[in-house]
Image: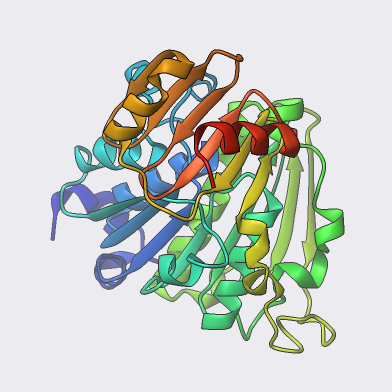
Length: 337
């Protein structure tokens, strides 16, 4: 067995048999921001056989303070996070199959994105996507390791269909809005801690050490030295997922068409058609102060001050506004129906 895992194999709860199980496992990480980069680093270095990275965004300078896999050059070139992470981690462990998908997880595609995964790790920064992952995982019987971090606070829980409650059992969608890293900030240590809690629970699940699993929601504030655990208890009978076998987030396809990215002054629009980035750079050049294109996206600085970011699969970010009417107006003017 590869010498790189020798110290991990010496750890008795994993051993050689556990290492083989890890090599035969497939993990999907959705969200390659702060949490996702730490999670991906742990999974690839631990020798998980297949790691799928899903993210809709590209690297920006504001990410570099806490998103550990990215460099200044990634931000300068506007490399999609999933691609930049894959390329970095491929140089760390060439024996792991790393798949990078540049896409927004939506009700239309989430089940395909999670297909074949033994485990889903939450690297997202919003509860809309978390509830979507929760519903898809519980529909298909895939363990879901929830994690979140903002300011100096973080939370994590291991949610296993048929064994534990789901996210909806102890958190309603109405309670999930509010503060984000883009509105009140975040410090890097809480990200590392929460993602490490997620990663160790992932390893326990994948090697089959059920007795060692944590069966509580852990909440901590590293700045104010607080830690709290809440027993997850049993699935709630009235829960749509656990009790009624309904999956509300998978039915809400209308939400996929236009979405405000909280705290980012950005509106995401699904165009419903693919973009030839070279052709669109030529089309939009007369309306732009600057354009910048790579094989993954096209950034266009508009004369009005906002910025359009076009992705080949047909997704657009209107940056510089969080007003739907303004974003739709710019979209209609420059992209059309």
